[in-house]
Image 1 (tube, one colour):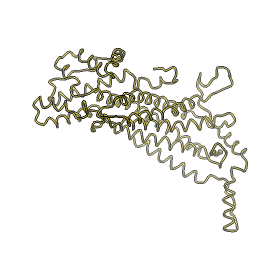
Image 2 (tube, rainbow, N blue to C red):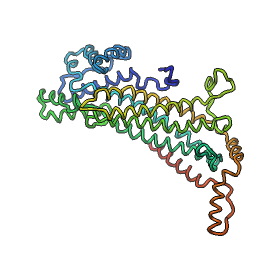
Image 3 (cartoon, one colour):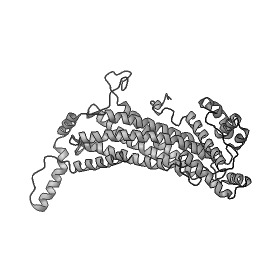
Image 4 (cartoon, rainbow, N blue to C red):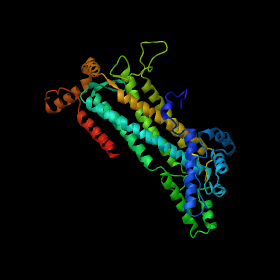
Length: 415
C-alpha cells in the first residue's frame, strides 16, 4: 500500500489493511462457530476461510454505513455463501458486532506489534554496536541547546538504547496480554447461555463461559471479562505504540541536530533518490529522521483520541466513541510500523564522524570544563588545596554505558 501524503506507508504492507481486517473478522467468526459445535450447541461447523476475500472489501464497506459497522454486511455474505444451511443458521449466534470487530482489530494490531518488536530488536543491536564502538568518542554535551560539559557519543547511543529498551519492554508486555472481546449484546453472554439451555446442556452458564475460553484459545488471545465499555485494552495498545514513536522521535531529533552542516557530527545512511532537493542540488536532507519525527509528532494525538473515546464509553455499548477508535488505532499501528522500519534503517547505517566531534569539542574551548573548575574551587575552599586535574571530565560515563549494554543484551537474549 502507498499513501501520497504519508510517504513510506508501503513499509507497513498489508498490516491492519481493510483486507486484513476482513480476514480477521472471518477468523473470529470461524473460531466462535467451531466452539459452538465443540460445546454441542451448534449441530455443525463450516469452513469460512475461503468464502470472502479482498475482492469483497468494497461491498462490505459500502454496506457498513447502514449498520454503522462492517460486521453485519460480512455476516450476511458468509451466511449466503456457506453451503451447509444448518451451519449457516448458527453463524454469529451469541456474538455481537462489537465482539467481532474488537477482536479482529486486536488480531490485526498483534501482527503490527510483532513487526514493531522485530524492528526494535534490530535497532537495539545497532545501538549496542554504536555504544561499544564510540564509548570513547568525546563530544560536546549540549543542554538547553547550548554547550554544557563533555560527553561521549557512546553515552548518547546508550541513552537512545535505554529509551528503545523501555519501548520494547512495554510492547512485549502488552503483546503478551492481548484479550479477546466476547460478551454478546450487552456483555452478559445471555444469547449463548440461552442457546446452551435450549440445546439441553446441563450447565448452560458454564457452557457459555467455556465458549469464550475455547474461542480465545483458538485465536491465541487472553480470556477476560467483556470490555465493551472498559476500553483499557485499546488504550494500552495505543500507549505502547506512542511510547515507541516517542523513543524514535528522540533519536531522530538528535540526529537532525547533529546532521546540521555547522555541526556535522552525524550523517544519515545514503540511498539513491533520498535526501535531495527540487531546487538546491547541494543539499542532503536527513529524510529518514524527518519522517520519523513526523510520526512522533502525530502519534500522541491519535493516542489521545483513544483515551477520549474510552472516557466517553457509555452504558453497556458505546454510541460513537467506540466507532472513533477503529481507524484511529489502525492509523496509529500502521504509522508506528512505518516509523519502526525507518528507525531501523537509520540506526543500521548511521555515520558517525569521530574527528568532527573532537574538533567541535576542542573549538568549544575551556568553557565546557567550567563545571570542573567550580568543583575544584569548592574543594580548595574546604581543604585548602586541589588535586591535579584529571585528563578528561567524563564522570562515570563508562559505567553508564556498560549498564545500558548489559540491560540490552539481557533483553536480546531473553527472546
